[in-house]
Image (cartoon, rainbow, N blue to C red; front, side, top):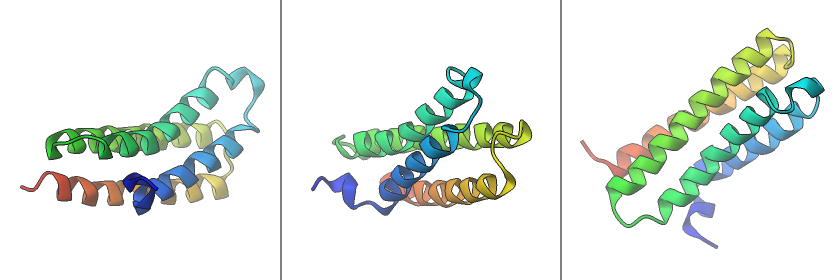
Length: 118
């Protein structure tokens, strides 16, 4: 088992990726190359950057990948908001994903602070 697989934030972000894939499966077909693709890429980017960051040797490099993961989480939140406004996501699914993303960003903030002390 690699170190990133033990991180709770990686495990949670992986779960969100699965939720996003399932939620976007019901999006209109004309969104296949729009929101569907963008949301899936943003969701996968969170866990991928966490994993990649753990392979870096300096805390500065690790912190940079954590920042990118955090940015991808905010990108995904924006896309969830748009999807809810467009009625592609129902309120229940939207709030579930929003809560997941809020939890992940808090965890990423803690991870970053442990990598880049003030």
